[in-house]
Image (cartoon, rainbow, N blue to C red; front, side, top):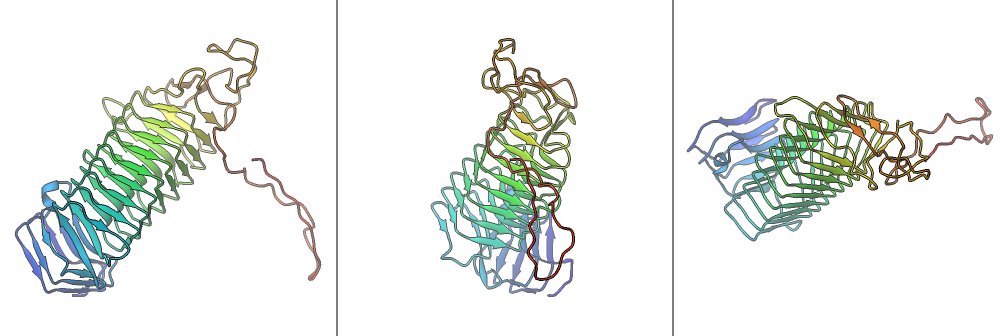
Length: 382
């Protein structure tokens, strides 16, 4: 089979089918199963496609399929694992596609996966590790966890997907993302938590994504720390639709054309009781927006956040900023756009290294002769 843009084989909301002995070559989409279950796939060959293979559904039971390694993508076996434990997938293996449903204690390390709908899928899978992996150029999502618990994802990259770099969805709890980089996501977010609680995101970087770096959607009690969220096309971090009691601290949020941190009241109840402190917000427009009621500092003397557009002075100290001694905390609050929220204790200096400002235009001779040496001078402030 050879098609230009339509899927070569597409099943939607159907069950108990068998696909066997097919050659799918040069298709934009190869074999796609959407909300379809109890299917059997044998001896199918898929090659030279963009989205070679996909099994996707918002419902866990639809991942119950029988797909063995006789099916291949570009000569590499499809590993569609159901109910397995204590397995390792690493660089010694040829892997065309990797999906794990109802699995436990799985290790995935040192591999690269591309050209499918998902780079890797954990569905109802727990106590497993993904590390030192690269998921590039997958159509929808780089790393997809659905109702997955107590997993660790570390030192991985997810890039050039259409929808999300890393998505935790449908009650994915107590997972840890550490040193994960997402970039060049074409349509939604570098990292998204959707209806997922008690997760930890630490030391991650999200940049160049359209339109935002990181989003919390109906997700509570998550911790985001020490992340670098920069140069996305609109927003840095977005918190929305009843996402409450999250903590975001020690992050550098820089160079996003719209809000660095954006909380808007798009639901009832709204997103409240989130805590933001020791973040560095620079060169966003504005640096923060909050339509709801949240806490933008961690009290005195720990303080709040560094805001590049804060214009207050530091001549006083103490909880009420009345004692005549500077304390590296602004004497007046920083007003957050959107509602009546304030950072009561804005920091006077960043809590971590930030990139220098854009250099000034070089100064020197504007015209010269070939073969002559000329000196030019520019400067910036770090």
